[in-house]
Image (cartoon, rainbow, N blue to C red; front, side, top):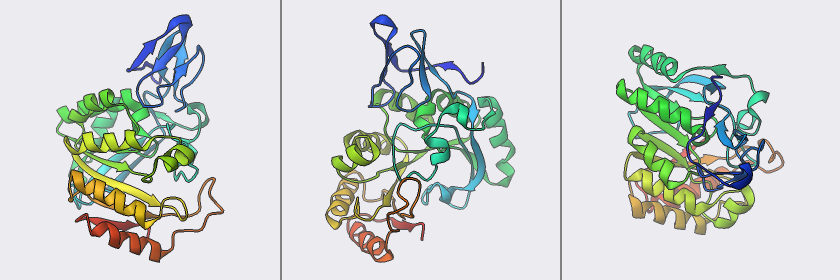
Length: 291
């Protein structure tokens, strides 16, 4: 079955129980159960990815749409995504594929070699490679790993658009094949990560730190009124990013009511503009998105 593949990064515990160690949730999964991501399943004491070759979305995008502004500007990239996510963002833009189950979404089976062939066929139209995006690509790990390795062999570039919630070892093993990452830094407080998106800030910061040393990194923050839009938080975030490199591009995106946050107002332009000014005091490349 093309969409079932034994997962990488898990430990077998007594009584057929499994511990997945791909992301910092480190889910302990009983027989027949799924991880928080909804796509990694314990079948008879073995952990399987349920989405190995399942592609839910594919598009040919300008690289700036990822958003990556300082990585081969003016080129295009073949973008592909699957199903599921290890976060629970109530403002998710792609909730129809990220916050669902694999069999609830229409997907196409596309092998790694088929996706790489498709990417190569678009080279004369300005394609530089493959972006793994739309849902959370790190939970699609086995497919991303296999495809990125093959793409690299064929001279293509690999881009990851991610929430950054992945354990250090799997990230380290994937990074040699990744040329650029856009990492969501969804806020700059542990409370926001814990209560709103159900993750941990420190884990995401660690991913940014590790990735910045190995590939091109840009960071995106969706600015949500009343949740992560304080000047103090932006100062701390910009200072921290600048301590890695003041040249890291930061994209501040405007929030629009979506998914489970229909009742929250869109981000005022003044808020976005003010935060842009603050971040620009520490960082050389700050952009406003969704405006």
